[in-house]
Amino acid sequence: MVKPVIVGAHYGFRDWLAQRVTAVVMALYTVIIAICVLTMPDGSYESWRGVFSGGFMKFATFLFFMSLFFHAWIGVRDIFMDYIKPTGIRLTLHSIVALALIGYAGWAAQILWRL
Image (cartoon, rainbow, N blue to C red; front, side, top):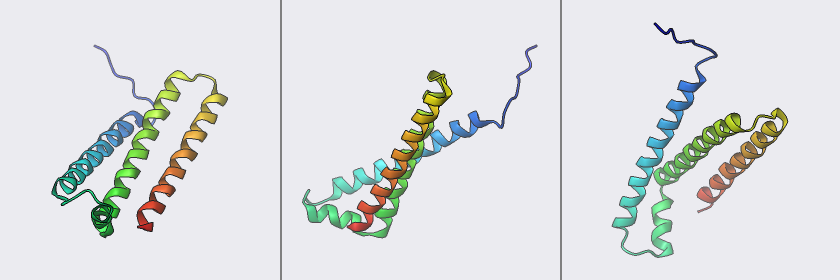
C-alpha cells in the first residue's frame, strides 16, 4: 500500500481552488456582459457608458479584473516555479509580474471609476 506524503501547508489545493473560483467568477461575468451586449439597443458610446454607469457593473467588472489578475498570478507563478530553476531569475520574474499585475489593477480601477 502506498501512503501519500503530505508536505507543506497544502498550497497545491489552495491554488487549485483559487484557480477554479476565479474561473467561475470570470465565466459568470462573461455571461452577464454577454446579456448586456445582446440587450443593448445599439453599440454607441452612450450605450456602453450607460451599462457601466451603475455601481453593480463597475463592481462586477472590477471583480472580474481582480479575478483575472489573481488567476494569472497563480498560473504564471507556478510556471516560473516549475521551469525557472535559478532563484534570482525566478525572484526577478515574480517581482516583474507582480508589479505589472498590481499596476494593471490600479489602471482598471482608474478607468472604471473615471466613467
